[in-house]
Image (cartoon, rainbow, N blue to C red; front, top):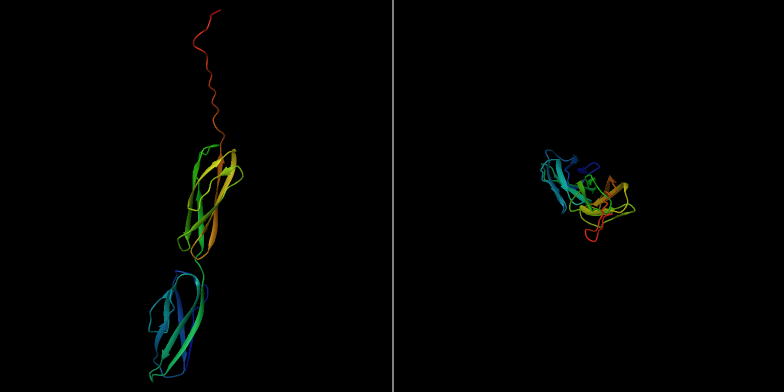
Length: 185
């Protein structure tokens, strides 16, 4: 009797995938006992099982097929589970002005939280953060691109950016005249 286990390819952390045991020989019907490693979940007594594994990594999934004469044959397969893709949207609002702080926010989707963030600012802009928000101050006007990279617990990293237009500061002109000691003439 043979028992061959297959799970296909392209598995992603936190997403269910199907494994199948193909049994030949022996005397049907067969019953199946599936063995999943730590980090994977799923139950079945049939030739197929829906499995979910997290975090990303390589896992060995095994099946023992037992025929009606109590003959048992095991099979296993190594499955590589990748991290979920991450997407990052960066927003900074509008109305930015030279030398006035504004806030940008990175919103990651996908992947496996928690995330760590790395911000990249253009020349003339300052700010530091390892969280999803950053306070930025730019000392020069013009179009600036603010970027953030988000890294999830599976080390999957993706970047996003926003372009902001920094306006010049309003010009203020204050004139003072003395109010005493003036002579007419």
